[in-house]
Length: 553
Image (cartoon, rainbow, N blue to C red; front, side):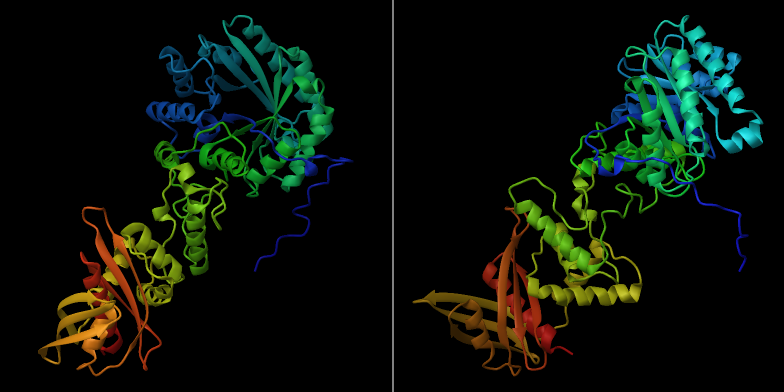
C-alpha cells in the first residue's frame, strides 16, 4: 500500500478567537437566501444549460420563494449575456427580486455587465478577486497591496457605471478563496472595499466570505466568520454572506455554524450542484430549519417537482440517500425501524397536538409532498411490523398483532430467496396465496346458524376425505357451534386462541375480514383469514383456513 509522504499535508491553524460566542448561540430565523444555481451550478455542468433550461430553472427558483438569484456572468460569454437580456426583455424579473451578476475587476467586463443590466430595477454586482496565500503566490504573483489595488479599481469602476444605470445597484464583494486567506488581510481588503463604496445605512454592502475550498472543520469556519464580524468596519451596515463548498463533506454544518457566528446570508444551490464536490445544498439547510420550528421562507412542499426540474436542467440524478429528498430517505428496511415508524404514525394520528414525534422520521414526509405509502419497504432485513403496515395502509387488512410474526416470517422467506425488495403488490400476492389460496384437505360447503337463549345452533356442510359431510352443532356462538359440529367427524383436535374482525373497503363494497388463531399439539399457533360479505361466513372461512394451514402437509 502506498504511504502518503510525511509533510505533504498539515493541519489548519487554530483561529485566535478568545471568548468566542457562537457555540452558545442558536439559530432563531432564516438567513437571506441567494441561489447561485444559474451561475456556480451551471458552470459545473458537463453540459451547461440551454436558454430553455435556464428559463425553466429561473421560474422554479421564483416559485420556491428566492428573492436573490445570481443569474450568471454576463460579460464572460454571449450565452450568459443573452440570458439576462431575455429576462429583462420578457419582463420575467418580479419587482421584489434582486438579480445578481458576477464580474471581475476589469473595465471592459464591468462595462459589458452594465450593458446586460440595462432595464433591471434591482441588481447586485458581485465583484471578486482571489486573496489567498496560494493564489497570490502561485497564480497572480502579486503582493497584498497589489491585490487590494485591484479590488479598489473594480469598486471605482462599478461606481462609475452605477451612475449611468437607471435602477438600484448593490455591491457584493468576495475575497475569493477566503478560507485560505489570512484573516487580518481579509478584513483589511473588505474594509477598504466598503469604505471606497461609501458604506452607510442606505448603502449596505454584502461581504461574501466563501469557503471556495473547504479546508478545515466547520468550527474553524465559524471562528473565521465571528472573527471577521468583530473586525469589519460599519458592521451594522455589512451583510455577511457565506458561500461554502463541500470538499470535506461538511458544507451544511459549516454554514449552520457560520449562522451561529453572525452570518446574515447564504449562497448555495439546490441539491448541492457546483464545482468539485458541489456547493452547499439550500434544500437541506432550509428543511433543517423547518425541523427546528423555523420558517425558512422557501417553499419545498412539492419536492418531487423540484427534483424533476433540477434533474432535467442539470442532467444529474439525485442520490437515493440525499437528505430529505432522496427516493429512500423516508423508507425503512430494518424491522425494528418499521415497527417504531408504524407505531409512531398511529400515535401521531390519534394525539391532539401537532408536534411531530415519529421515531426515525425527523420531518413529516407529507410536508415535502411525499406520501406514507413509500415509507416502508420490505426486504430480507425487514420485520413483522413492516409487512403488517403495508397490508393495512395499502390494502386495508388490519392484522391482529399476534399474527405479525407469522406473516413476517412468510414474507421474509421470499425476500431471502429473491434477494431483493418486494413491491406492495408482491406482498399482497403472498398474503393471498397463504391465506386464500392455500392447499385444502377440508373444505367449507355451506353454513347456516340460528340463535335462541344465547345458544347458537348451526348446520355445517363440508367436504372431508373425499366425501361431503353434514352435521349439526351447538355452542355459545357461531364459531363455537361450528367447531362442535366439525369435531363430530374431524380427527384433528385443536383449540381456538383468538378471534378478530373488521370491514374492508368502501361502504357500498365493504367486505368483512375475520382472523382466527388456532392451537394444536403439533404447532404453537396458526392463523387463518376469511373474507365474505357476511361476517359469520367470513369467520367460519377463517377457521377452515387455519385448519388447512395447520394440518395440510
